[in-house]
Amino acid sequence: MKKVLISTLLLFGLSMNVFGQKHPPAPPHPSKNELINLKAKELDKKYNTEKKLIMNHPLATKQMKKIR
Image 1 (cartoon, rainbow, N blue to C red):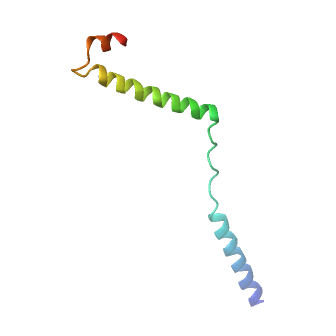
Image 2 (cartoon, rainbow, N blue to C red):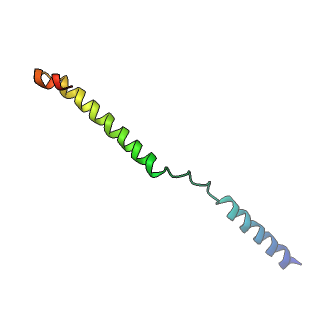
Image 3 (spheres, rainbow, N blue to C red):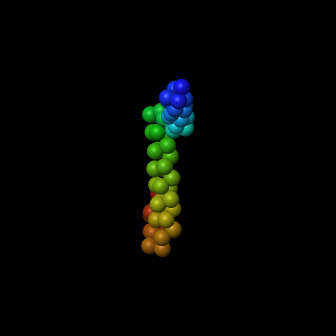
């Protein structure tokens, strides 16, 4: 009787330990088109900020500013 009680408690304890270690499901991965769009937006933003910095530089020529 004592062995049965110990084995059931041990089994119950191990099963509780396993259930406690379950991880939440991983978030869904973005599709290829979504990744491409995100990267394009990121590059456009970077390009525009760099262009602004260049155009506001004191050595930027009038011809460079016309190209805008």
